Length: 42
Image (cartoon, rainbow, N blue to C red; front, side):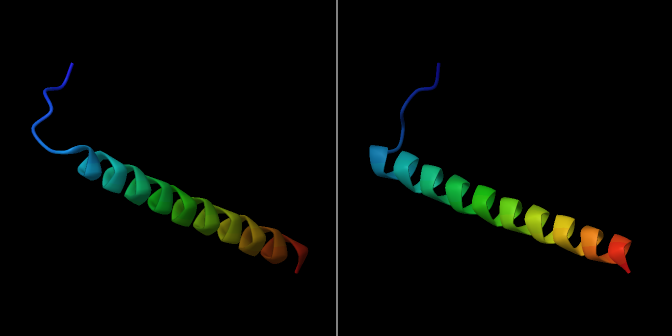
């Protein structure tokens, strides 16, 4: 499918970055849900 031009270390780095970005997005979403819920209550 893809020809490997760069080492396996780069793939690991990309995977770590993707996990961090996903985690940050999930935290932002949870925070958004909390804010929405508290606004509804007021």
